[in-house]
Length: 265
Ligand code: CAA
Image 1: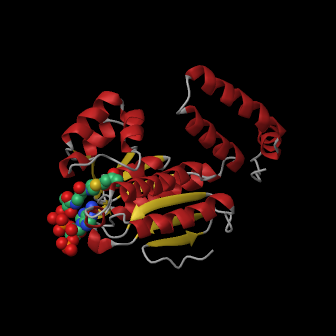
Image 2 (image 1 turned 120 degrees about the vertical axis):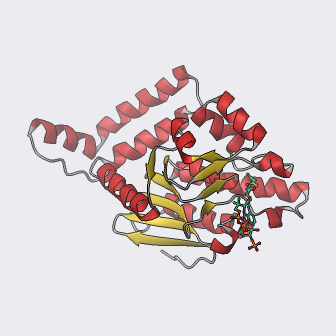
């Protein structure tokens, strides 16, 4: 696929790709161009998946920052209408991470503040380095989170923890982020984190890709539903997947005591 973007890079490595925001001098801050390019790239991966990817790592260029938030310089002169459109664009990008038909792991190196924390939360789960710093500092700038932070943070760490963080705008070191369940695993270096994320994707990819992508969409859909409604969605897809090649193959391989050969169909 066309990987010629100005502010992001997409590098494919076998079944997986690494998507990076590459504005290192501005600590990978998210301006409208980054969002536009992320939206174009993720839409293509979601709708066409031309290279048949099975997993994505999302990170930031350099060691200092994953993403230090929305671009404050660009935001400083926005009208309310432009700010509304900027939020919707960022939210569209966040939804695209959730709608990808394969897992996306956020690999957080350094600062993940404001929009950075929000984009990391849109991925399926978060790995981080020991230097990672999370936070939603928007109220310190006289604004509020706009790329999903007021909604997703509470779902991930509970409403009270999320309110305390958003109202104070304080930074969160990686140990506390892990304790709260925001971060799944912590690594000494960025290289260690990226190779562990690749190993995790390989482990996931040994399973049925269809089952993994169905589990992802059912879990994301259920996040917005009552337990009763969520269980109905689960039962519907549980039944549906019994018509798949992968389900027949996985259960036959078990009874025939051999390794399953999944096709994702
Ligand atoms: N927007 C634009 N530029 C940014 C930026 C941002 N969010 N964060 C950092 N930069 C720029 C700095 O202006 C600086 O540029 P210059 O070299 O041209 O001066 C460069 O990146 C390096 O940053 P610092 O010199 O500030 O580096 P530091 O090590 O002293 O501090 C930091 C690092 C603590 C992350 C600090 O840069 C900072 O506080 N950044 C802003 C964090 C923030 O408030 N994020 C939330 C933004 S609001 C938001 O995201 C809203 C939303 O949800 C939609």
